[in-house]
Structure formats: C-alpha cells, structure tokens
Length: 416
Image (cartoon, rainbow, N blue to C red; front, side, top):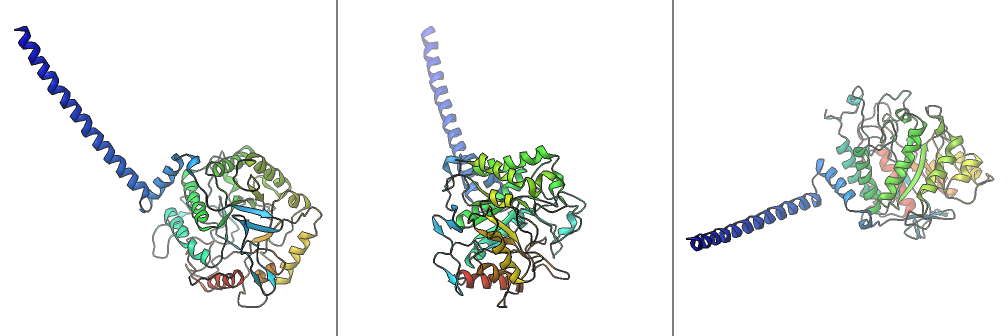
C-alpha cells in the first residue's frame, strides 16, 4: 500500500515538474516577444509621443555607447569641424571663406508657452492649436535643406527669443528651466533632437543659455548658477562635441531681471563653464568653448574679449554695411583681442540681391555672419524664423535670398 502510494506520488511529481517547466518556457517566450516589441518601438519612425520615448531610451543606453560625428574646434581665427577648416579652400570675390561659421538665428526650435493666458497667440493659420512637438519635428525635418545650402551654424536659446520678433512686454513663459534652475525634461528632449540631428549633419549649435525676456522665471542668483551647471552637465553626459556656448543673448540689455547676468559679470560665467567642462569633452580644447553677445552695434569690453573663446557680435540697428566691417576692425584693435574667430549671430538686415549688404560686409573682414528674420507687420506664416508659429522651410523671398547668397558664398551645391 505504501509502495503503491509512493509510485503514485512519483507520477504526480513527475507530471507536475513538466507542467512547471512548460509554464516557464511559455513565460520566457512571452517576455521575449514583449522585449522585441519594445525594441521595435524604440527603433521606429513614429512621431509625437514615440519621439519622446526614443529620447528617454537614449538616456538609458549609457554614455559610453554614444558616438559623436561632429567636433567643432578653433585654430587661430578659424573654426574647424573634424580637424578641417570650415568651407575648406573656399574663396569668394577675393575674400577668404575658409574657417568662417555661417549661421542663422533659429531660437524657437524648442518653443512652448507655459502661460495659459497667452498660449492662444500661437495658433497655426488653419486654426490648429500650437504644438511644441510639431514645431520641433518640423525644425529637425528642415535642417538637411539648410545644410545643403551651406549653413553650418544654428543659433538657438534655452529661453528662446521674442516670438513676435521684437516685443516691449513678454508675458509668455518659454523657458527650459524650472524656477530653481533645474531642467525641464520635455524641453531638453526637444533640444536633444536638434543637437543630435546637427551632429549627424556636420553642423554646429550655438547654444544660448539665457534671454532677457525670460530670465525672470528663475527665482534668484542661486537658480541662475544652478541653471548654468545643469546645462553644462547635461551636455557632458551626452558627450556633445558640436556645441558652442553663448551665455546670454545680449547680456547688456536693461530688461534682464538678474543683474548677475549683466555683461560685467559674464566673464565669471565663462570661467565657470570652462572649469566645469575641463578635460571632459572629446575635442582639441578638451572643454566647451564659450562666449556671450551684446545688443546690436555694441562692442565687447576688454574683459569680455579676454574671457571669450570666440567673439560674438550683433548687427541689429546697423543699417550701413560699412559699419559692420568697421565693427570687426574695432574688435581686432581691442587690447585683449588674441586672434579669436569673430562672427555675427544676429542681424536683421537683408538686401541679399545688392552688392553691398551686411552679410557680404562681414565676410569682407573675415567674420562669419548670422541671419535673423522675423515676421513683420501684415506678413503671413511663411515669413520669418523667429515669429511663432514658424514655417521652418525656405518659404519666403527673404529666406530664399539669404540661402541663395549663402550657397554662392560657401560654394554649396543646393541642387544635389
């Protein structure tokens, strides 16, 4: 009797063991299939929420897996990309173009409005509500076309710029920073897509930290300093090598709420960025390269020139092309100038079809130039790159004029 029961027990145990093993096998298959589904979602081309998922997944890969394609560096007055001068060997009308950084002010690539009372201002022409994801996606989709026309630099800002071009009051809320200086994940995901695409295309991002129309959303000086450190660390974690830093847009502007951001103290910020990034960037300088900008027509002080790795100028308000050339010559005469590259990264003057214009004048003195275009009175959706909502295509006569001259100057074959 006991023997019979032992045999029965053995049979039951035997069958139970196979049942358990079968369940384990089924579970493994289900889990494996789920893993493949997730991998497929990460590698797909879906837009909107899936783009955010891909940005999140890139953060979990580990920084050792990131391979960057574009490295910006400086040798004397020239910018280099991947060890070679920009526009290598190029001359135009007897002027050297090799080593210059032609750029365009495209500061609204991550724009959103966190103020519900002003958000309605940015509706699309068809009546659709403004979408930060759509804006960012269309920006990234337009970048290859800009690059084909010879554009190597994109000026963008973590606090944007006036979405109306120029504004006396700026009640909207567009900032990549929380009040304490921490980073808003959704903004930084959009910025990551832009810098990643620039890296893929061999382009340089001139990344501005602060803008005088939005710095009031930071609580205090401690928050400003935290913001600087947090952005530097964010860039280093992603091993970016195609980014130039602009501490603030027009730091002498009287509308800055935090006096620490004024031009007198900007050298402190530049030194802070250098120290924090030193030895942590895979580039000839082994750190981030940094500068800052002033209002149109304003020349930097000796202290700013001394602290800057490259000199930024603005041509707003400078309607005479000869005065653009004069600005460059005056910078080179500043006592602390040590042969750094000079470039304009904001100028709202055009006349691209005329022999004399601000673009050509800057080039004549071996300085790069940056196009700034906004939607003027009674103009429509196709005009301007700063006015929201933005048509990021080459969609107006001014845009076409700029990119046509850009291609001519740089020798780009936009028809390829």
